[in-house]
Image (cartoon, rainbow, N blue to C red; front, top):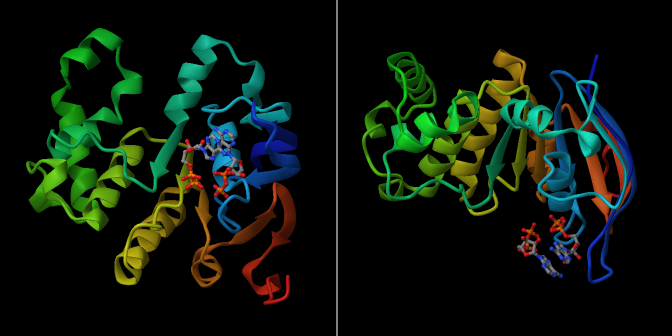
Length: 239
Ligand code: ADP
Ligand code: ADP
């Protein structure tokens, strides 16, 4: 049961940098895929092509049967709702409450006027609170995002993604700016989402030992080329 099909993907930036070269792989529903590679390998470009923040130069990306590189505005709106993003820098709205940040994940479901006015239903609010409880942030709900630690902020961004009810979560170096202990907490939350909710995860990392601990599958990229695709056990020091 394939959720995502990436086929012969190429991305060359305007300055001539070939960031992705003929990248192909399929992802089945429920997989926890870690994309691993050094800085500059093309991991971030890959995720940004998948969520269409970046236009690929060549190739195709199918998500649940939709060819995203050819999708129209309405299809893209539905697509954006189904794909949650988590970034290294958390990307929260710093000056508003944690609860409101999580509610922002619901915006894709609403018409833009009520969303812009910040009008959420009681049901949306109850659900956001439940998600925050689950992720251990019930106490922080009414604090401003900028009052939280980095690890807490990353948990808010996971909660925000969950409130979209996504089918796929793309996480671009979600633990790169966190200490090792906090990193484990974040990885455990991502793993739980995949395990318990069946949400497929694609996570960019550069730490091999973390990848091996959490991934069901690892894709290694180097200089824009897929150099490894297999289980954590198959990944040895010399691959
Ligand atoms: P990673 O996420 O693995 O660190 P990136 O996808 O960020 O890799 O970068 C891959 C390559 O593409 C690098 O050489 C990087 O400098 C280059 N690159 C990334 N974004 C751009 C851009 N907007 N314009 C030009 N080159 C870019
Ligand atoms: P990453 O953590 O993914 O490696 P970087 O810190 O390399 O990201 O890049 C941060 C931003 O700068 C990104 O938006 C990326 O697209 C852009 N960028 C990276 N490399 C280049 C480049 N060579 N030319 C132009 N923009 C770049």
